[in-house]
Image 1 (cartoon, one colour):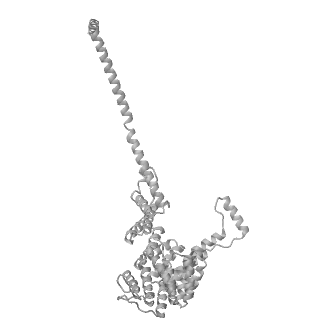
Image 2 (tube, one colour):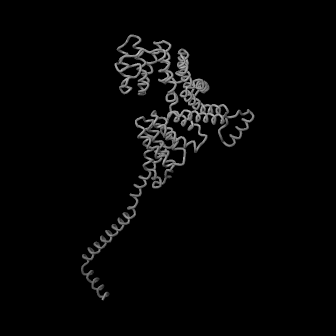
Image 3 (spheres, helix red, strand yellow):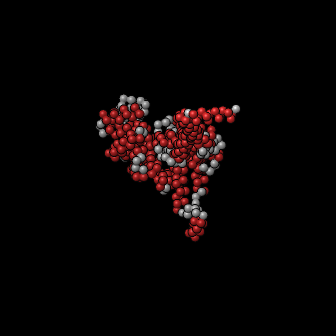
Length: 438
């Protein structure tokens, strides 16, 4: 049957050549269309997975760049701007586990704790957060590292830096845990002593700071003979280490000792041991890193003993070492008032008030305006005295602040009043002269 059909079809084509040409063309066009469709299908199949793959790679690279930038700013001192540090640490905290999904090493538990500590430090530097916005970050760090000193030390240091003594108890507990883990940590001992002093456990504070000074003195570098130093430097060079410099070693050791001497001096003053405090301040005055603060302490002791001219000279040395310190100028003004040098006192008070205003230091402004009111009253400028009293009382939340009373008049001051004010300054010096910078 197939043979018969083929013969009939061939005979038909011979009788109708034109139709045969049309059929052939139609078949060729159909085959060409099918070929094009096949090629298009192959091309679409080949290209289908490529486009989303490229988009995914771009997304991953962007995430990786953000992660590394945040890590640099938060954990590797890659930024000095507190707002940038807060944002970077927040990003890492929120994306702590993202590393595994973008091909980088995820944060360790320790690194995550450091992110919380870094964010807390950034908030402190930004000065727009209260303790309620900072302490939770430090609490999170402690929960992550309950057996390490790192987080306890950070939280204890922040809490003792606050002016409110109610936080000192929590700070004390944290710092005691730090010292239990690291018994020779003299920095934490100093902070603990200040916390103990703030809760008025003065004997414990004295014992803690004495031990800190003892531990630091034991670590004093021993003198090295020049021949031994050459040998040690040759060994260091062979091992590609930094050469040993005895002078630099001694200076670094003294700089670690200096804040301990300063803290011990202020604690002794709180205990009423003026002679012991004087010896500590004199020792600290020989160390350049705290020389200005030591001279300020000696100046206050001289003023409390009625040696106002000597006090002015010592406080002038303190100001030479720290020219921008408004508190030292305020104290020198007070010493000048004791020496009846009103012009010098007034000049220092104007300068101190301008500096306190720049720093928005309410405590300093309250005191400076009250003392300037006293000078204005003694010069017969009662209107300006009343204006200063008004500012001082407003800064004291509406309560009278000596020598101003509620009626904005100024109480006349005696020599006994001046002595009493300097004695009070000495007792509170631990909060002013040795503040903790978290």
